[in-house]
Image (tube, rainbow, N blue to C red; front, top):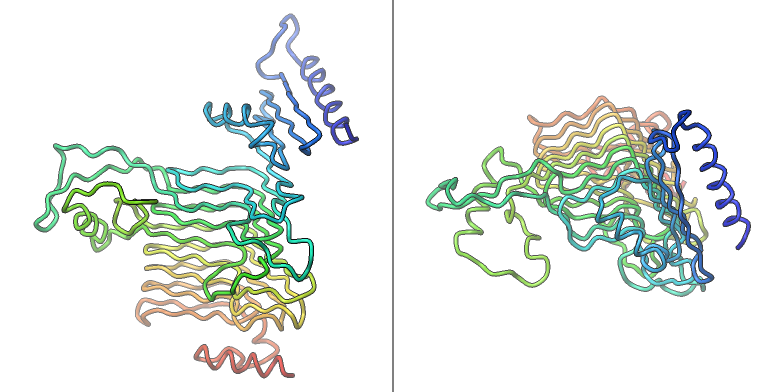
Length: 412
């Protein structure tokens, strides 16, 4: 064992004796002051330490890396999932010796994803040679291909007539499609968070960092480098949910190949996205340019709430650029109380927001905020723009005017 394993085992030993010493007099076991730990080690894996305590301070702790969860520790991990034990789980250093696409957490298809208070760090590595392209595939911190909100089976008696179609509607359970709460995610390559969902999504109080873009990947205007969320749920204000669900279920259909519920209207679920109190960072300071046009993309067919986030782009001077740090679009969009920061020469826009109902106000940004929507249903400001204090009229009335001013600034 190296020094790290020895230190962890000694710490676990002293913690267990300390907890025993704090137990109540005359009792051999105290529910409030106990600690247990079990460890496994092999020459082919870096580390796995799992522990649990009932001392009101630590509920459960897991540290795994370099394939531990899916190999030597798979028995314990499956048992934890089966028992649904709330715990702090550290997933780190997977793929340290392999440039293949690696994700800290990968979910192909699920109902009611709940990821809370985990540390997902340093999973995946770049190709060794600088000129090599990174192998194609999904990579990053948290990658959810598709998640849906759980529903109860429909009651044949309690059906409803929509237009001329009589349909049995499944009842929602009130659980979201995805909840991401208070995680620390750092991806050396790929997005820190990437997901598609059908149903409510909340991302609250997380630290999300991406430090690289896959080489060889073609940049796309809406391909995010740090956070990407797509929600196919519909608002029911104008009964879109009911009509589309009834239309799709007019004729009984068998299962389709692949994710057969990955379509608009397949479930009675809204598309609310709440993204709040997060710290997002795109760090591309290594030599060489990166193929990235934006850092954060959140798209929904319903409401998008983007509040009190701190968003940073740390880019190389003269090498890396983003057209806009955040792209936010939905039927209704509310963007308030955020801080957007980029290098003064690294972007023309800090954020672009689109919505039929659009409120973008009380934000602080380095560059321009491009706000679009029907004038009667749009609130644009007040916002504080840093570059406007140095270059008057930098933010033009149109996107083309702002891009032209940015080109003049770059040329000096």
